[in-house]
Image (cartoon, rainbow over all chains, first blue to last red):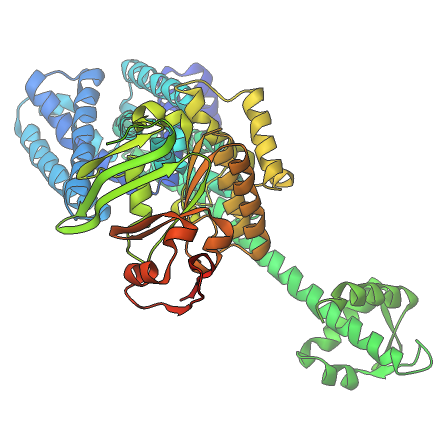
Length: 378
Length: 256
């Protein structure tokens, strides 16, 4: 299939539409909930939840023999939720810090999950179960029943997020202040974590447990680059999640045996990279340009003020001065010729003869203004 | 214990331990209405812990707290809180106005969103702390003193009768300190009570009416003129303080 055919397929082809809808749903929900995880510095929690969900998937299948998405996802959610509560309990009741607790619980649950998966693979009905897609994700196996399940769970999670917006914001910004006002912040914490579990669980089949945490962290981290408003950050993060989800899922469906999870993660990484580099205010390129401009302005000011000072020592503003004089006055003499060319371009200084410079009228008024601005500082 | 609603705050036998080490030991406090009280004491004396224990943010091992004669749980609406400004992430994506509005959440209760009247209260509070120009500003662009003013405004919109402030003067310049103390005095003039953790012994007599000297135990608590004495300070700070003592206790100044 070519790209054009795929894009046409979005509207006509049942499979492509199902895959796109499913991955858009997971991108939107994990993008939105991921914002809170990132802002609360709980990015690793997503990793723990997705990994601890694995034994739940296998157990749900072993116990019920069912392949219904709702059953498998319920197992995943229960297991992920248990894992998260274990982490919280370990942190609260011992002196072990969050990162160590996450690491331990994640390893134990994930290890147990892998053992169970291996066992399931050996049973006769394993081939039909297709549980292996939960490891690295396979969007092309999405059925409309899967997408319905994902959509309903995701819609409930987003509705609750909207309903408890104020409480969640309070939790993320200043938990103790919330407690002092009488809000049961631990209950709110568990509710928000439960929603995060839901967001992660609906992405497991498509992205897989190994890389699902990227869909929680990456869109939110990218969105934070572009805005200073929580609401807008959530919207952007959802859009980034959806775009990465759909493009990754479609790319992997186009190619044989390309696992969906890694493809989606590569797409979202591209978004993160662009955001890190080019976002205004926070982007690296933006900051680089800003500091470059500041340096240039400082260099211009220095030479401009030196020219003004020299002009003050002579009768006429037009008395020319050598580059060497200006260089001796400057902290960065090697940059002086380039700065003089720049001043000429701006019309603030001119060179009546090569190597000889003086201010123009425009340059003098500019320099006088800068001098009075800096007067209090100098 | 005396349960008088005339007292803003009464604490009896409050004890807290961290593992085996006591952090607060058998604290008794009685704070009348309408005063400004400083809690002073050396590092590790348990000043912040005391405030957090009173506010039920820490669970004490023993003891009772009464706010205007009743348990704190029933009087939350009467209490405002200014935490240390270092306790939150100032890079959080939100605006100054939004942070101040959080002070209204307690009165709003569950699910309800702040409305126009809450917004107006928040703007008035920001005017009081001279930060109204900064209302739409992202909070990461604030200086330390401005952050402190925003936290104070957030407490003001709680419209409480008793305020707890954890080091409201920490790391602010003289101008902000002046502005904050003016607001505290204005609160007092409207009958409010303020309990603040304070570090600068020099300014205690000037800023506060009452003082509690704390070092795990409550060394002394009462009107500044009665308890802010060289002897009590020596007990609290373990003789590590140099004094320029004068005859009257109220004139006592201390330098660390």
